[in-house]
Amino acid sequence: MTRDLPRLFRPRSIAVFGGGMWGPNVVEQCLKMGFDGEIWPVHPTRDEMHGVKCYRLIEDLPGAPDVSFIGVNCNLTIEVVERLFARGAGGRCASLPGSRNQRPRAPAAPTCRRG
Image 1 (cartoon, one colour):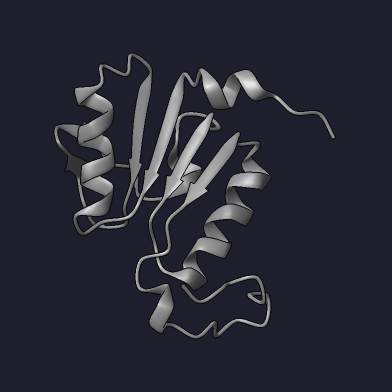
Image 2: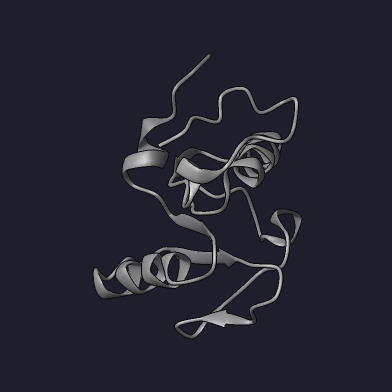
């Protein structure tokens, strides 16, 4: 397995998964720090986050993101990571909101840990 670290440390595209305050906050911080690549928020119902167009599905993204920030529930995180991997995405950082109180429901979720 090869490691493409420039994609992780010098990304040209960042995908952000999650709503609530988390996803919009990540988008806002990328804008504040002057990230000059593409920011691709992914959310099933939102049209935009801080003026940046949202995509409904991973498959709607214009390409495979270099970095993905994932802030969705534990069970959905597994699906998102699998779909990103299949798409050829680079590094992923997951924050599992509420995972302390969630039990994995899917048999494919044994790596879902409690906070």
